[in-house]
Length: 257
Image (cartoon, rainbow, N blue to C red; front, side, top):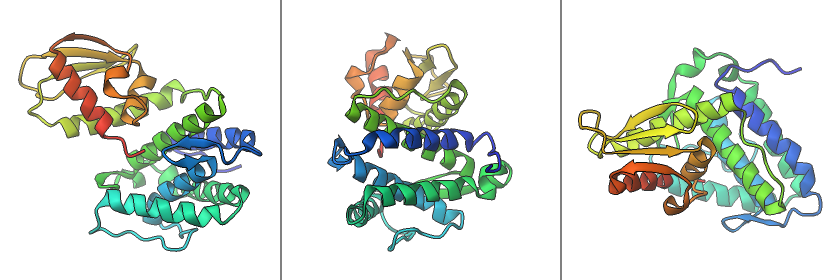
């Protein structure tokens, strides 16, 4: 059995297992359109590319030719370019080969000392334009893997369960931290809560709260993942509508998925 992972890597391990459980449903349906202009095969290839950056950082050899970390490049351009390269590469192979490469890379990530040792993974590194502890980059990988698993499930007409509550809590907390940084200290303060969970003041910490906003935890993650337009996400609000709209629009703008 593989060694147990630490709390910060558990959501990624679960998301990888969740996608692995869904993939057999794609037999004979790999050309199903999923998201953006990707079919199911391309979506898994994208995850192979998406996990690659952290893998390289943690000393795992690249599985696809052309892997590199260019610190000077615009990260969104580099991200899109690498995704296109890997999708083109994988479309020349069978979906089974792509799945095997993705699965092996995911297993290698979960086999690193960083996946088992919270203290080792507490060091920060710059990935995708943001400097975070490696612990949180594992959460980013979990977030993206789950969102794209959900994308595939929706394309197939199959319900994909959300992450377990203890994992969802970690993903929400990470998204809130990133959203708070994106809003900065000048935004009108909004008391944000996830239904049945924690609450945070987003924006200015010195001014009186201008509005309150409550979202379901899964809906909040789907908003941050770009799967809801701000006006359509189910929510409960009171107070300054412009302050709420600012939070929702900034949350949606975080999506790179």
